[in-house]
Image 1 (cartoon, chains in turn purple, cyan):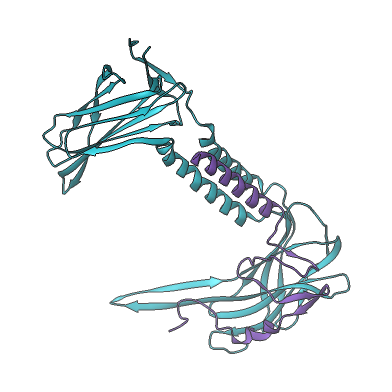
Image 2: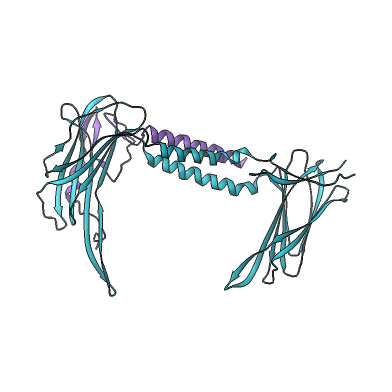
Length: 75
Length: 329
């Protein structure tokens, strides 16, 4: 029974991850309001779609406060 | 009447479901290797960008495709101790921004001195990436916009930054594939550990002694019975034990009896033996299904602390195993 359960789980994991990876479910879809975007290299989208038009997000200008990274931060 | 016990190596009780996780893990591994086959590099170039002045690449044709996405990877060529906030912009034919991703990149270095030791460190986070999928085919232009560029003291800098840009089409998101590979491999390993516990436990009895006796109804045609004997012993454990396993039928008549020699796993502390563990696994097909008695006797018995017998019926195996068939008529 347990082995059948394990077999079912692995097949499900493989089906989901292969589909998501090959059809790029985490990519930004142009001109689509509902996004499943998953940022790469910490690159957040700086806008959203409103009626198919890209609108800058209100937080876009908060970069002014960026203070870099590294071990010196927080000291 | 008893037929003579017959021992035969058989793969009859192999559970093919145990192999599925391994096959699927192999498929995930292949998918990871092959995921790069469909991708094509469209642009690989570098671009100097002045702060507040967006610079762009030549337009490229974005096609709606079933597999993969358009991947834009950007690497900011930042000297040490500088920060930059930049944006990857995707523009349509009219030059309107239709998507953008913001990256706060930095490169810092310095020296440290602590308890008489010293050295230098350098860290950075310069890469940005945006994967985009088209809802329609159209020409797009990729631009880089430097929004804010300062040194670590917060002073504005006004000089061009060199960005390395790579644009690829048909790129598969391997983060999902890695997650899938780890997930399936984890379960594949779990199945290995679960083999020994397949089936239903019909006897689980232990005795603080060197012998244990138990009786239960088990067996039947096409029923693999797994008998596991575990022995715990003290600091005087020998290197091998002789385990006599005897099976009695419903009438109490002995139908199988054999001495198995097993090695003892010593657990040591500073090279001195503290305790020992040993185990014996045997497989039976017992016909007909009726009451069977199991008797385990461990010799030499001086060091034996505890003897346990676990009998599972309807067991499965991963490989062909030696099965002892006991038939009485």
